[in-house]
Image (cartoon, rainbow, N blue to C red; front, side, top):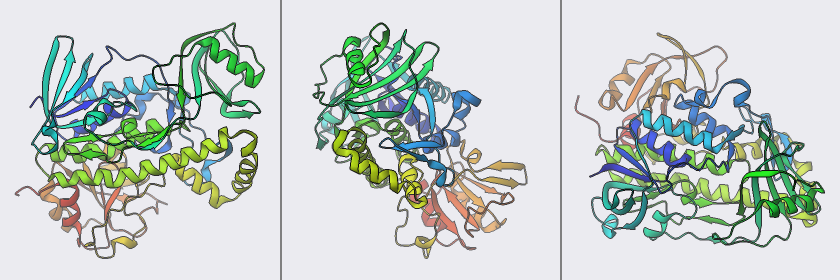
Length: 501
């Protein structure tokens, strides 16, 4: 084997996954067909939940401090603005962080952990052995010629036109593009900010300053025909569309780069086929809305990473990987639903005005704001982590949800739940100093850290639970009502076969 896992694609999803795999003890190689990162930044930030994932690994400070990591409490759904703080802990996410910076941060983190990242490596073929054999084997064009590479598992994180997905024969059903939209980083022009978009009779535009003298613009003209992947776009076309919508002439400026995107919506029929898995845009594409694409890919990686590392290193059966599709496919389906709905409101023109007006009225109600904020921030995700054996577990409100960042006091001083997850291990949080918990989890030492700590003053998030088992992705896998009932089952399910002790 060249590695336990080969990840194809060195974007945010692939790099996040590489770091997660290394934390789980798996050897990983990342391949990317580009000779070097483009420096282009289609994404500009990430959601509140993606910020939490980075914080759980201790890498959020790498993105900057203070104003360089600004978050906005005011967000939108389809351009209808509202305050996300109606949902506790929610916000619209980090704004103004170029995707190139996100990739650089994640590449540095993954490399620090020992991931082998190789550029100018393009996958050409996949041996059919991946479907029923004990490894996946690919043919790769490298700077030194064509070679074969082998790993126990192969992950396609290579974008919407994923080569890995096509080679693995995984269907990608959905809807075709109906329109083209443009984005560009422009120079030499002074523009007023339109952070959350402005809907005008001839289309929708967004604008945000990136750095001194550079603005990111998104231009969505009504009636612009869909384009094929081979088409190109010029700054002159973008400037003409901008003027058509806003009446402002930006043709005297220039562009660092221009591109186009569409409203095509597709989702892979299966996230795993044999020894091939998909994550990020390789698994789902949609209309960009609120930085959800990059953020969903990061969460795909956090969900898959610890599971794949455990399986690839022989500590758990491959059935654990089926939970990746079971948990993330519904999340992807809901993502496509919410972005399509936003597209109808955002880009529907005059026909959408009644819908926009009703949505504006609805956001005047707290329950609606909480619901929409949960969808866009991804803080409302709850996995079904019951298996029918945990007595009473279905009733606990924490089970399957991500545990918010929670202040704790322990024998070694103050800490918090995210800091406990920095190592990428599971965490058995003992809130009552119950010696039975440490004994019950001893066989998973090195995979699960048992920590005795107590909620800081005013912390009520635990809803009466006396112990909580956190998976490495921060979701609650078990809660203890004063006993260890069900704990062994949960530990085995999520962290593999217990070691002799």
